[in-house]
Image 1 (cartoon, rainbow, N blue to C red):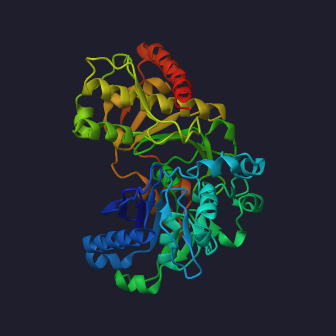
Image 2 (cartoon, helix red, strand yellow):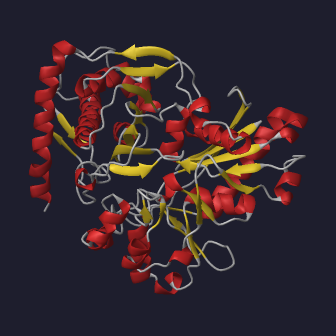
Image 3 (cartoon, rainbow, N blue to C red):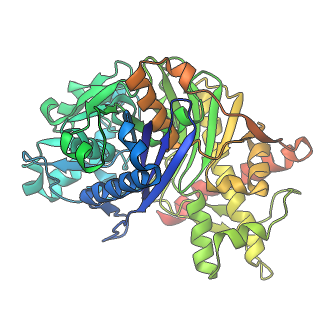
Amino acid sequence: MFVGLDMGTSGVRGILIDEAGTLLAEADAPLDTQHLHPGWSEQDPDSWITACDEVMQSLRAARGAAFADLKGIGLSGHMHGATLVGADGKALRPCILWNDTRSAAEAAVLDANPVMREASANIVFPGFTAPKLAWVAAHEPEIFAQVAKVLLPKDYVRLWLTGEYLGDMSDSAGTSWLDVGARAWSEAALSASGMRGDQMPGLVEGSAPGGMLRDGLRSDWGIDGSVVVAGSAADNAAAACGIGCLNEGQGFVSLGTSGVLLAARGGFAPAPETAVHTFCHAVPERWYQMGVILSATDSLNWLARTCGTGAGDLARALPDRINGPSSTLFLPYLSGERTPHNDAAIRGAFLGLDIASGHEALTRAVMEGVAFALRDSHDALGATGADLQTVFAVGGGSRSHFWLETLATLLKLPLSLPASGELGAAMGAARLAICAVTGADPDEVMTPPATADVIEPRADLMEAYDAAHARYRAAYPAIRGVMS
């Protein structure tokens, strides 16, 4: 049996599978996030340990004595988090999370240094790890002076599991310190940002072994033999492994808290000027590129809170089929934006509100605004040479046929819905554990799922949605000008 642990922003999800990928048990534990100031987002790293232990104990309880045969654990985690560890292996402060934008000024300074983009193949976004360390150096120098290691969130959990300071290529690619083409730490990027190589963990591929479970935890969880902890992966790379997205032309769109349009790449094709992320995949000699928007279902959740109702209730009030774009525009920049704008300061807006605009009109505008933003990501991916052919739709927002048909029409791509329910990052992490333990070929383990449904684009409405997207694109510089 194999465990996949996925550390999301709001909680840890764990699944237990057998070598054939059959789901045997699942468990969840919540996490809290602190927002001490506008733009700040932090978590206590030790709360991850508590949540992971709770999940493992729940999985053990679900399987009883059979849990003693566990062979491998794979990890998935949210990217970019700055977990600062002292010489004693303890966290020095709360982790600064991926959606924290306090280091926008530091990111701009680093990004202006050509060394950073040349080495990392990416813009230095405010959410990435390197500018967060620059912020700590400037504002918390007493903490910065004590930093022995910088770990990404899942690798702090690995330290607890194994005692090893290790990271994987896919997660490390989001720090701005990794040479993404060479799959190694860049001494030039580290030096340019005031860091040292000895402060970085060792590196392994996600499908390779990345430590052994400590004896104390094996005893606590009633496990008889040795347990391999896989090199593991960043959340989106793990999700790609979970849905079988490894090769050129394969991709997925995720309508989760954030929105992601990901394309697997067979080679290294950086294009940082597009604001597309170019990262190492979780398996050797593969890469992936993705456009990222910061507020996808978060936009609908925000509207639901504002309207005093549930997000599901808002979504169910819309028809299943689209009939043309709304006259109301929504810009989903509630927390700033990454692709294609790289703008931490921009904020959202409704345009074209009418006295008759009610919950349904606002919901429709929000869903279209998120879809327009993902169309921006599709266009940016196209500029890198990515050519998506097969795209699965995942995430909570994929339950809305209206949202998916809007998105399919804007992307001009059919969107496939997987037949199996458990194909996310936790499944990808468990699949990486299978490879790490058995040495299996990732292409044989990480196969695409059967398709339950295909949402086709509406050819009769493409021209209308293209025109609406053009209006949406024109709104960004106008709103930016007003805010400046």
